[in-house]
Length: 286
Image (cartoon, rainbow, N blue to C red; front, side, top):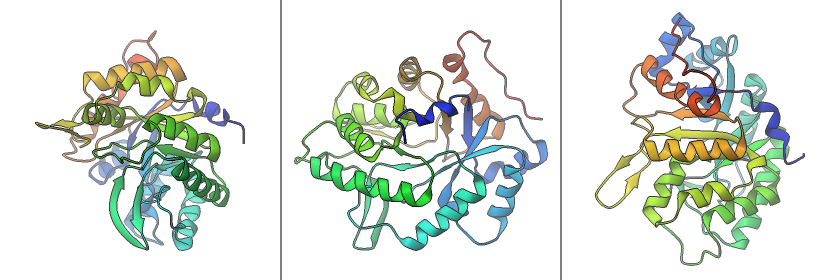
């Protein structure tokens, strides 16, 4: 697959995460939304309300899948049953690409249920890239790996995080879900220039961008997804769009979730950078 295979999705505009508190509003009001991102694991079931809602959403909206448990960086192979269910969902949604995190989170079948940062070593690059290739081939859909927010570092690391990301996506021949909020959070926790990160990723491989809010504490910043997007993150987003061009953008708001209208209005602020020649769009709720 060519490195620029995500270019065909540059018209996706701005999406928001499909969340339970907004189900009724979306189904009843049918708001104008470019697309929804779903957490794959919430819909990898055989029946029930989540699938019923999803099928109704699919009748009107484009849907992209995002995962939270693939753990590309864990040394153990992925569960075949997990992959089987995931592939079934991919066929159901017809997602044009599928994303998950560049992290580890399991050892010998024991899961941490967390997105843990990788040791940035050449050995980890090789193991991780091979795993991504195998999963991508099995699912038969392009994969984009997301940079995670980081609160710890490994002394054995042989390169920067962005160098590690670049090595992995080149060897795996996959895309990038560039989370600019995570970049900012990690930059403040580890004292590096976030613009150096954004300027260093291969723009032709960026399939999607995440924006979100975060919380600042006395000694660290936490990726909480419970606030509007802050100005430093918008600045990074603006630079990412300058480098990558129009890119599918997703606002994450996963805790202390406000009304659909408030989330949608915050997401649409991204149009100031995606379409700077146009007047800011207003959220349409019906």
